[in-house]
Length: 235
Ligand SMILES: [Zn+2]
Image (cartoon, rainbow, N blue to C red; front, side, top):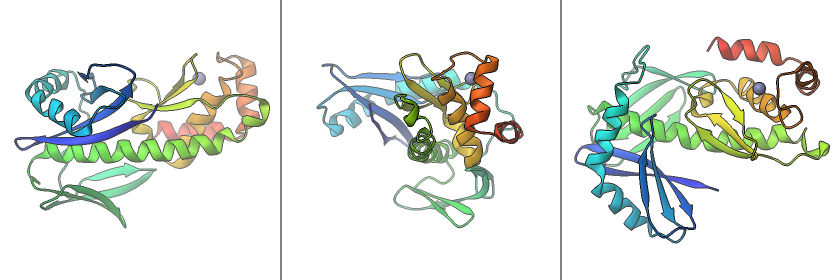
């Protein structure tokens, strides 16, 4: 089921959130331990009303985010200021934060340009960049899954549904219900490492465990998986 990402402002703060539409009559707002905001809305909900409800709960959302903030290990802390480098698909890009009337994030050359009315507000910059990463993760990872799955489709398997998630200890995970969870940070890794994670998880369609048969199957699908894994661990 698709979700969309939106942003509202509360004072000087930008609040980004994902909206999922479900067959239900009420709207629910939740702040998750990774500080992301998830809105579950009725299928035909008006987006203006969704935005308004998020704004009404903005104080509570920011409080919840602050609460989860204290558990966040920050090594090294990202500053979200001009000059700082961030990884995207394995390449370093330099951040350039500009003052502008409208918010936008654009990757041009070796730079990620962030336009915001509040360039000093690093939380707002972080939120904009997080949303940008998440949107690109959804698009790119779906592309990679579609490509990688081409090797599995002839074997009769059903393509799992991609879900980008904040996973604490794993890059990916295949659920028994046919969902492929991919760590939202994986979009920072090179494409060959992304493909390794996806193919590893797809091999679990045949072998749910990490038995010898699993690794034999993985090696047949991706002979150089070990060098890709090593590269990923060195990120
Ligand atoms: Zn595994």
